[in-house]
Length: 109
Image (cartoon, rainbow, N blue to C red; front, side, top):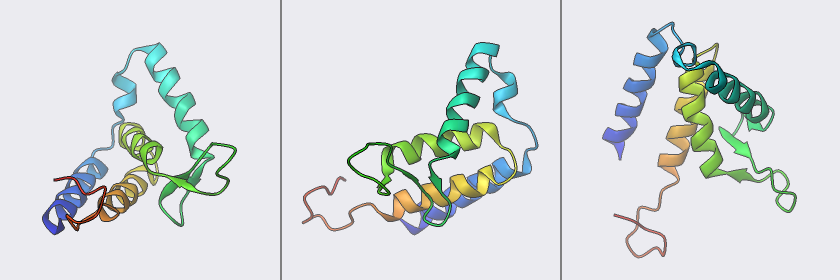
C-alpha cells in the first residue's frame, strides 16, 4: 500500500511538471464534453475532504468515491492550476479507504 501511494505521488508530480493539457489534443466535441463535465463536477468538489459530494437527492453532503475517481482522471487530463494536487489528494483518499483486512466483507485481493 505504501509503495503504491508513493507511486501515485510520483505520477502526480510527473504530470504536474508537464505544462500541457491532454484536453487540447482531443477532438473539439470531446473537449467540449470533458470541460462541461469538469465545470459541473468542480461545483461538487469538497476540497477539505478531497472527494466529490454525492449528487443524489437522498444523500445530501455525503461523499461519493466512484465519481471522485472519475473527477481525478478529468483533473489530470485538464491539468490547470491545482488540478494535479487535487487529483493526487482524491487518489490517495480512495486508496487509503480500501479495506485492508481479509475478514472484512468488501475486502478484495
